[in-house]
Length: 143
Image 1 (cartoon, rainbow, N blue to C red):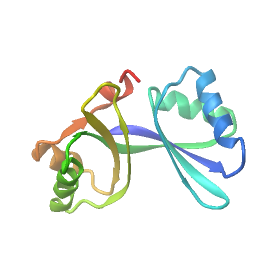
Image 2 (image 1 turned 120 degrees about the vertical axis):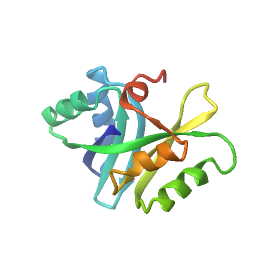
Image 3 (image 1 turned 90 degrees about the vertical axis):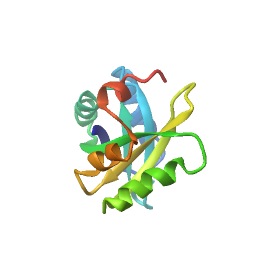
Image 4 (image 1 turned 45 degrees about the vertical axis):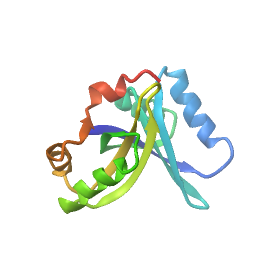
């Protein structure tokens, strides 16, 4: 499992820019970013190269940030790639809370991030022959 940074952010002009500038000024490289919003607030989910340092920097700047454990899975770029992963999770009785993806530069695969409700999900995916990515590889991807 990897660590994802979650930041509670008011839905107003400039707030996301301030968040990303704060991380950039601290030399933290973003791998993926996803915003789930409502009319007033949103949760920004971030995969970055130094999640603990990012959390600390953001909290010092006044942001409400937390770390969430998620699964990163490398999915080949072909029809049914995502379906195979979701079938394995479903067969193991694992509920998927949310997901998002990004593409590795020059790769023939996408990295999907999954938040699940079952710590056995990694074992279920590995047993199905699905490549689960660890933090060492994910945090050091050349983006």
